[in-house]
Image (cartoon, rainbow, N blue to C red):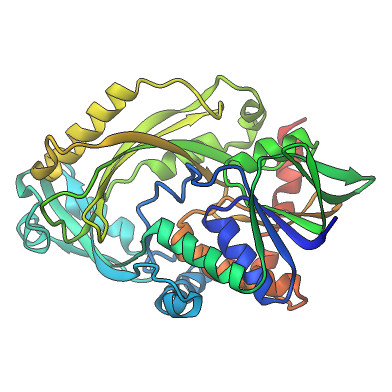
Length: 398
């Protein structure tokens, strides 16, 4: 039986980027993914790269590294990631005061510019200017999420890495060391294991007796086939509610609820948003729900109706466009930084999950983490270690 230096569990953007960067460091790598086409947050993402949005020294540096990384990745990986830069329009809903909303964006590394509804319409002719009070605009990076993941996978294989379709059900633990995983009833051996399985990381680790302060929302959206009209900009709301949902859902005092299916730990929210890909298909989002079950029942027909109403008000051309409702899990942490590094005093197990703004932050963090694992010191990676929550997390479980 082959013993790999690393097994990476999950082949969304996190697993794909990390496995490639580990292979670049000379490690032998096996990626295990349950589905050939996973219905992950990567699969259903907008693919936006908000490199303008850093608010701290760490996130500003990583956003800068992220956009620089994206500008060369297609060449480096020898596959087109469909990278481009376009205008982002953060629409200000009717009835809200632009003078109140605009100052909230002054903290960002590149503050978006406030423009009138008419000027927003000039940038995006499909936009209904009567539906908004104005907008904030800034240049924004963009890739096709699946194209980026495929490019990372291609480059990993070129470096001698291996990808297999198999559902990981358990970790192989010998004392205080993880020595591999069990997938489809078969053991796989490794020097170290990285859990990069997004929202499913918490439940997998919990079954192995390793608690982690990782949370998730259920994101719902509509995906369309190619349409016969063009949307120039990426549209999102300037009054995004998702951050409030994440703050409520990750409170330490309710942490134990996340291990009990059937709870709704914060009210659902709807943040309207639309992106068109280079093949002219669209994604319209998004409803977010803080539900502790991995596969809860929701009223898909009502969700689709709500999404269509909100997005068609902004872009009337969307009214009646055929499309399929889908949902995925989006992982997050309590402080907005991912969980990156070793877990709980157990040798051989690491986590690489919980990314906010993954397309901006994840590529440079994957590079840094792989180099850190290869022996290079990195104060940024040190600040992302899961044990930063240890005292707070243990207290919440008392």
